[in-house]
Length: 120
Length: 107
Image (tube, rainbow over all chains, first blue to last red; front, top):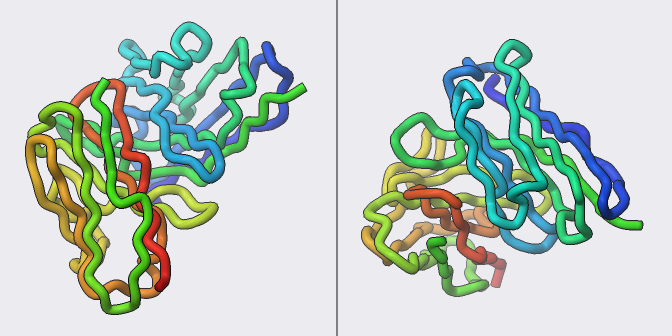
C-alpha cells in the first residue's frame, strides 16, 4: 500500500524548535518530489515547502522561509521538516504529501497529519 | 503569488442533486489545476488534476473543466459520501496555492 505517515508533532513554546518526520512506504521514495502542507483546524490548506528527489532543490512559503528547513533521507525513505523560531501562528496540522509524477505540481498521496501547537 | 478564489464558500444540496463549484485564478494557469476533497478530521484526497483528468479510483460523477483563469468542479448525482469540503489548487508554480474551500452540506 502506498502511504506516508507523519510523526513528531507536539506542544512547543514560542521560539522553540521541532522536527517533523514523514516515513514513506509502498513506492520508490527517491523517485518523487515531496511536500509539506499545513492546516489550522477549521481553516484552509496552506502549502509550506517542497523538495526535489535528491534534496538539492527546495522551495518555501514566505511565511516560513528562513525558519523551516525541508530535508530528506532517501536511504531511510523519510522526509523531514525542521522547524525553528516557532510562532503561535505556526500552530496547525502538518501534512506530508507526495508530488504526482509529471510536469506540474499536484499532491496525490497524503498522510493523516501531525499536530503542532505553539503555545506558552 | 497566484491567488485562488473559490465560490461559493458553502452550498446546501440534497442527495441526487448536481453541485457546481467554481475556482478563479488571479492569473492564467493554463490547465494546471487540481481539486481535492477533504472530510472532517481526514487528509485531503486528490480528485482531479490538469483541470479535467480524473484521479484513479475517483467516481465518474466528479468532473472538472476550465482553462486559463476560470475552472469548475461538478458533482453529478450527489451521494451521501460526497458531503465534504472541496479545495482547488494551482499546480503551475511555487508557491502552490489553494482556494479557500467550499463546504458541501446536506440540505
